[in-house]
Image (cartoon, rainbow over all chains, first blue to last red; front, side, top):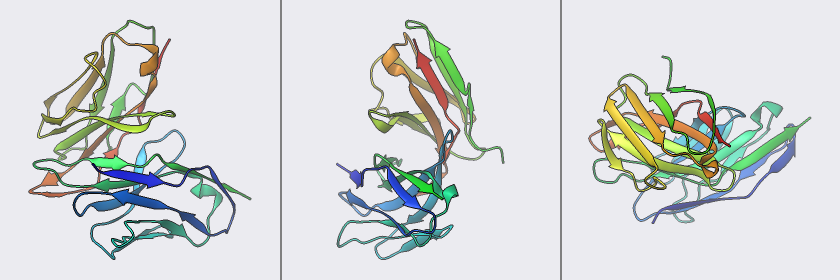
Length: 114
Length: 116
């Protein structure tokens, strides 16, 4: 079946540090890949996505590249801010007949300190 | 757009009571998803509907859980009887699916359920 593996958190960084959160996946077909972010007390929000190999998704300074050869979709940001403190979820979507659902990783908590 | 609306935002109930969680998806969306989030198990998909029809309920933990979608603008998740291990945050999400291509899921703010 499909699965997503994320690095365990929490990840604690100083403001303006470089961020990498690793994500690898297992899927039988050619999934679309997503990063969602969850701020405290809120639901998940889509951060970025990529639908095919070598696509790069980007938003709010975050980037992730769909690497089919390594089955990875690592999240990066060059300079994090305190406001980026949240839980980040990697997810994949593989269409199944007539419907679709997301398979999520366990989430990685990011804490950014001044 | 109001986004996905869930009610109540918080629910505290005693073991054995019936609990009903409500969700209003984004207008025009035709897929609706119910998730449960706990520290131990993370985010789990319980059930999802497409055009008001349940497509996959394999994540529903047991017969105490049931979900309905009587029309395109309303869904309920019911737990009867509730147990302390049902304590979690329950999220509803919606999306628009058309002919094999799908759009992102939009999540509601969640209902935090505490069963004592």
